[in-house]
Amino acid sequence: MAMSSATIVDRPEGNWLKNSAGYQMLLVFLLSLNFGIVFFDRQALNVLMPSVQPELGLTQTQIGLIAGGLSFTWAIAAFFYGRLSDSMGKRKILLVMATLAFSLCSFLTGLASSFALLLGARLLMGAAEGGVMPISHAMVASEVDPRRRGLAMGVAQNLGSNLLGSFAAPVVLVAFATAFGWRESFYLAGVPGIISAVLIWFLLKEPAPVRKSDNAADQSMTIAEAMKVRNMWICVVVGVLMVAHFVITWAFMPLYLVQTKGFDEITGSWVMGSLGIAAAIYSFGISGLSDYIGRKPVMVWLPFLSVVGPLAAMYFDGSPTVLGMLFFVGWAVNGVFPIFMATIPSESFRPLHHATVLGLAMGSCEILGGVFGPPLAGYLNDMLGVNSFLWMLMVLAVISGFVSMGLVETAPKALARRGLTHAAA
Image (cartoon, rainbow, N blue to C red; front, side, top):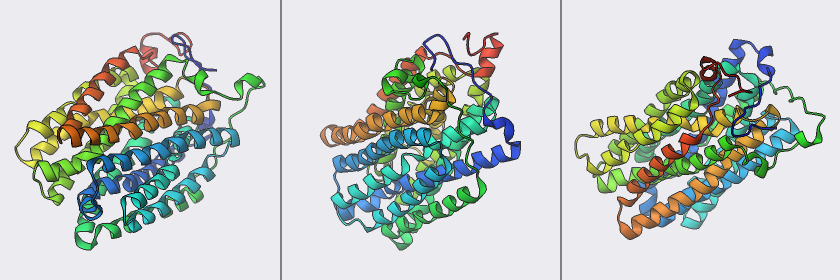
């Protein structure tokens, strides 16, 4: 059913043999674009917070609660959609429905006039968005050549999300809000998702259902069973820490750059945009590198490198351009997200359970890291000062690096160089 701490299941050939290289590229491109639009909507409130906070009178703790609330419903949806997708054997229709739903929720965010209404809108958005990535990764796992799985999953999760969500969102939405208002920016953010849903519906095909085993025990996978696998629980622990790191960074760094570092909102948006450019590049570099040198080395070393960003935010007082370059270096850690959320779990379990275990990986990261991390960081900021969240980021990253040392390698090429197969890793 799954791998133990010392064995890895042999992978079946899967549906990818029936797909041309061109279709595999189209699939990854559209899934990457779609998730980029998801993150464009998700990041919109974070980058517009310097405009939203004064009008609605939000405290740092409330800002954390809003970010955590979206992560909570995102996590619940990831669990639900993952299991539903596996049980129904339908990926595309669920993906289209989720995409249309989160687009409508962006319009609701623009209508919010109080903390309670804003929180409600973000809860609904998280519920709509949470199922997108587990289903997308399950489609990649079954439709793309396993030799390029790490790169494909990295592009699907990181390229579009960072070009659109982490670069375009701060640059475009802040400029649009400056000209027309922050509410109008949310109306703008909701349109691309509708277009993406139409493209997916007409250009992608429903993946062939995974052949189910005759063994009744293989038909379902419980959370307890999945968590008995060493790589699974390590990916969950690292995911909790690193998702908290990611959400806290985006919830508080835009405000910190404007209110503490003294940048104007446009300059601050470009500095934050450097994270998007960095992560888009690393989506190729880190994920592709892990296909060759292995998943474990990048999972261990990049969290340690990420402390460069928080240290630069606290102690560097030079030009915004240089600060953006330092952020660029530290944000290499973003390249490991698809590895612990998707690549390692998908290489550790049978295809029949892919959407379920990917939903577990992503959902648990969101519900524990994304939900509890931002409110705690906001509370520490209110109690101990605005630098507190930066120290929290460094602690989360360092612990992640140490925990990753326990991973069992799963990359096919890295194993082949050692003369090992998945079964004898």
